[in-house]
Length: 325
Image (cartoon, rainbow, N blue to C red; front, side, top):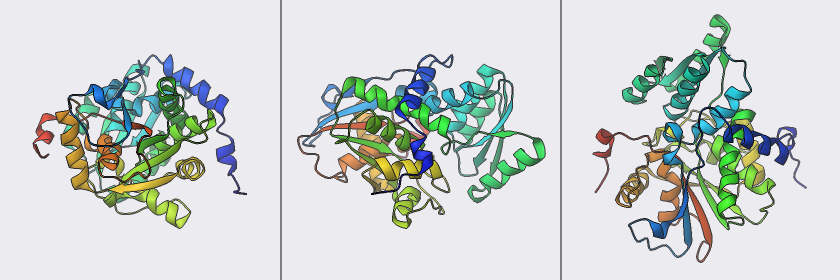
C-alpha cells in the first residue's frame, strides 16, 4: 500500500470542482477552449490512434496559465503587492490579472527569457527584474523579506494547481473516458492539476503522461530520485525549464501520472513546424506533448482515444524563422 501524502489527500474532487467554478466565472475571462479531433486540421498524421487536441494556445493571454492565476487571485487579498518568477507565460497571466485587480506586481525573469516577453509584462504595468536562472528564488525571497511582497508561486501552489484542474474537467466534457492524456511538464502544476481532476473524477483506467525536454527534465529526475529535485536547465522550450520541480506537483504526479517521458529540442522544433502546417500556432513549450506522440514516446496508443494538450501559443513571427519548414 502506497502511503499517500497528506498534501495529496487535501486535494479532493469537491475542492477541484469549486476551483473550476471560480475559474469558469472569473472576471479575467478564462475560455473553455476547443478540443477537436486531429482529422479536423488540414494535415494528415500517420499515427494509429484517435487523437484529440485541446487548444490552450487559444486561451486568454495565450496559454493555460490564466486558469491557475484566476483561482490564485480570487483567493488572495485585493490590492496586495505580489511577486512571482516566470520565463514568460505565467508572468503574462500574472501581469494581466494584476492590472485587472489593481494589484501591484513584480515578475522576476531569467536572463534567458526573450526581451519581448519582458516588455509585454511591463506593458501590463508590472515591474520586471531579469536575473540568472540560479538566482530566481533568491531575488524573490529578497522581495518578500525586504519589500514585504507576497509570493505567488508559478507552479507549486495548491490554488494554482486546482485552477489548472479546470482543464482536465473540460477534457472529460468532450471525452468522458479517454484512454491516454498527454500533458507537457515544467514545474508540474498543469500536469498535476489535470491528472488529479481526471483521476478523482473516476477515470481510473486513463493513463496520463507528462512530457519534458531532455535538457530540462526535473520531474523525470524527481521520479527517479523519489523526491523533488533541481538541475541546470536549458531548452528551446523555456516555459518547461524551471530550476526545480514543485513539491506538491511532484507528490500529485507520483499518485496520478503513469510516467514522465522526454523529447529533445529538435523534436520540439519539428512539432512546432508540423502544428504550424496544420494551421495551429503553438510555442515550443506548448508543442512538447505533441512531440511525444509524433516521436512514439507514449506506449500502447494504437487504436486508443488520446488527448494531447497544446498548452500555449505565445510565439512571435520573428521566432518562427528558427523552425524548419
